[in-house]
Image (cartoon, rainbow, N blue to C red):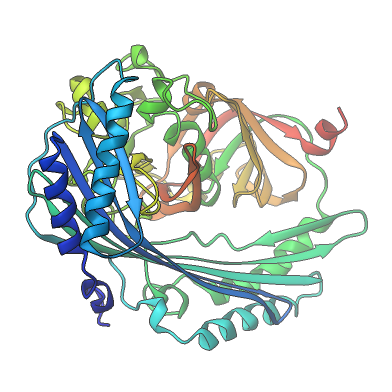
Length: 506
């Protein structure tokens, strides 16, 4: 398959005829809205440890779903048998579900208007489909990584992994929208593990998961610099194993994007999902302190804080052309000059909150499989750099006593997305503007608004990195989505640092 072309093994499937049959039946039964979604999602995962393949899996999720609004209520059903008769049956089931739900629906479902998009195609930005690369070649690369890592004296064991996803999706609705889309994403990584005199620790790659193809791993123009990182990690781990334990207290922090992306995800991304802020999403990871009464007035952070929601950024994990409600994806402000200004919306919420996006969804509906109903999911939520902002070295140079934080690790945040603590892969002590070696056992702790209001400076575009996660969970039944978060290296003043060894003993 050539780059950026729809996979012909997908386009050969009968999704158009199934969609026509399902939508026609839903209309006959009186649905005021109906949409049909056909998906094929392919997954391949490889895991290597100490030079040997530990596991390999190839799976495929194939099926379709029909969602309707009938009698002012939602109805949903899905199927896997690819025949017109089954498509009709699934549509009838969705309407039957809506009829039952109507008896329990106090506020009729209405959807924000959206232009129709007739027979449009979108394919994500990649060069080489990883599913076209022989599994043996991919395995050999991971084996080589672990062997090279284990050559370091401090490394006792090394592991490597690669998760690949090829997602095809067809959407059609009664308003006339038909979209066919394809996207590819990769999550490669490795970890080196070792023991010191009195501790055991590890050091992992800080390479982010990406919406790219196999080219991300091959050393070319669009690749991560795997060779340099593999060469450096054993020495970094050796230094960490010998490093002193951090002294708890208040420090200025310079935080690299490989760590800050996760803080953005937990304290901004989830906090500004409107369903969570309204209390609709409470069972899975709680609600949000950022309630609608604070919109336009809450000083979320300092004046240099500008955060966007974006489902269009190239190579973003949440990037798509059209969402699972047929909405063209967009970019918008969530925080502007430190002030809380926006939420992430789907069509039902967009209509009820016209002040947010002019009575329009901003394209945040997504379902992770044909067996799940679309829900409001996170966009690529990113902290913007300063156009003429400083380099990472310049930011470090502004600190007399502080820490430089690189890489993500463990984290904790409360059910309101307000009180949190985060650890990291590496904490370097800063003294008089210079890095003076690693320390161990550190975590930074704050409330969301205290932390972001302590933001003193953001780096320039050269410090900006698009990080992210493959495994953001939400909803019941649970769904998993991939999402990116871009940010520059950033400077925070007077942040509380905990010693995790001391805290663990309390």
